[in-house]
Length: 276
Image 1 (cartoon, rainbow, N blue to C red):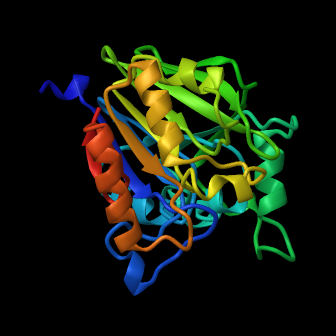
Image 2 (image 1 turned 180 degrees about the vertical axis):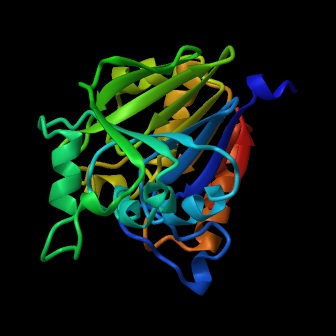
């Protein structure tokens, strides 16, 4: 494949709510949400969970000096890795940080509120990279580069979260986390983001059996993700935001059940690489 047309996902963290590193989570991983998309030679990062510092160390010598980092929202499990992202301390790097926070908080204010005493010893002024913050509203269409189009939408999550639909080189990837659902209905926002996508990532914190007692938590189920993928005509779906209590054995069994119903389904693993 021509490198300029390569569209690749690398999963640096797929766990939800908080990092969870135990012997029982070694296969699927315990890092909280962090995704890397390579669109040709462009690097797009989505969320800054505990997987981000691991990604940052891998990027130190890869020659890429230009990074776009997008947030779905600013709950701790999605931002905790930001202060430890090594490229932010490289004056030769240019990093654009994007967010469309539902309450109107700016990206710059979010960073300053997160990195302040007594919760953190230093503020964002400790970073030495060339940093730009870019605010948008969910529903806006973004163009981080001339050949990359990103549609955004507001998802159903306490405090709001942004879903993304990334189009590059004739292919489409959808990121739909964190979000919940109403049983018996298909969320039109999720359907729009996932329509005809080559690959989707979807919030599968719970199962349908667990959902009635967790319906206000702001997360969905893998079974609902399959319903959406099938209705939207998506080719593949990867499940993320694994519950903290979910072991490797649990996820392996759930993956087998999902694949029996939809061969293009998988449960995401830390460090997994998928060609879009």
